[in-house]
Length: 458
Image (cartoon, rainbow, N blue to C red; front, side, top):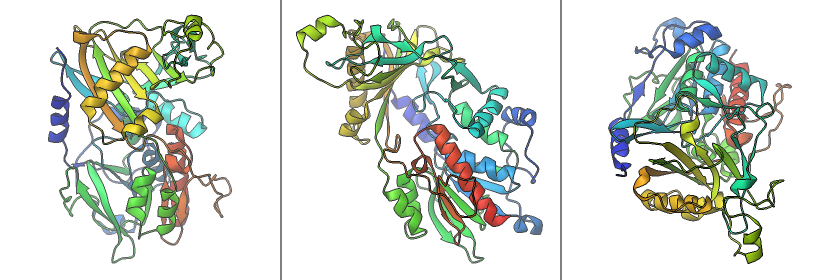
């Protein structure tokens, strides 16, 4: 019997409340070994520091708990600055997250956002090395089971033309036991100078009577946050680390130059399908990026997805493949399945298909439609009762289509300028929209923005 996503939604709604995580007195950044231990400790609760010494200490607000915000928080903490990070969602890590579901009375998880991490910059690679040391990151696809498969002219996936990535050239990392573990570990590695508030939306950014910045927060669901919480008081500076759309919303009328830069950015919608099956599909890969017909060096070969020469001879009607990425989610390290569940899959729909439906489409209807498209693309009949769980989730700001080109910042010669800075306001705006769509781009953008802010304060 297929489980419904309604129970998961109800559980999420029940936990939609302001969660406050506070740190102890300021201390230097932890060593990697200490950070690993911190990852295993539950966050402590406490009150905002109110001593005269604390008031003199620079305090920066970071708005957004995705990779840009975590990168900014880490850079500031490393420089001895106290940081309050505010995140509207229930957890840290942005799209590097997971969705809990119940199958057969047991809990399972889907990585429905970012599928893996492939660090490019030394700074991001170093941060992930600490996460690995903390036991929250592991290699995936080292056996060549992750790669690319071309689509056919008729919109199917040419399974026989799948080609795995060279794991030495493109190592891929995933969070363990889920992708959500990465954000928690990155926050823990920042040490006790970081205070993270989750379930708190920054409704407004205002000037305080002392000349600093104040945040007006709302708890998830719209309730106003307690003004006595740890985010009360003024901040010396602010780093916004959100999507372009959220940046525009918060900064319009506050720092218009940054809001205008963010307003130029366009983003795709991406529909993500989560499905648990009682029987395996028997596909020849654990993860595949689906490319356009002819884009793959082996695209002309025959395949189980219906992409062979016989189809070419039949001249099928040209139709783009709906699937852009597919992963056997249960193949990732540390994933556990309940009895009766053979495997779980995550499918990302193409930008054209996702944008045509929009983020506001009926989720249940999209789930059924996208499942049918996925099965047709891999040449499978409807599994019927073998579907144990089915859910679709829209990412309304999946990735920027036209990231802002980095611009050099006077006084920061070694900085690419992957952010927008208002020195007079002591505010920097960062995010993937200011550099590129990868998780590492967001991290690097946040770090650069934080460095620029720290130069103004220290």
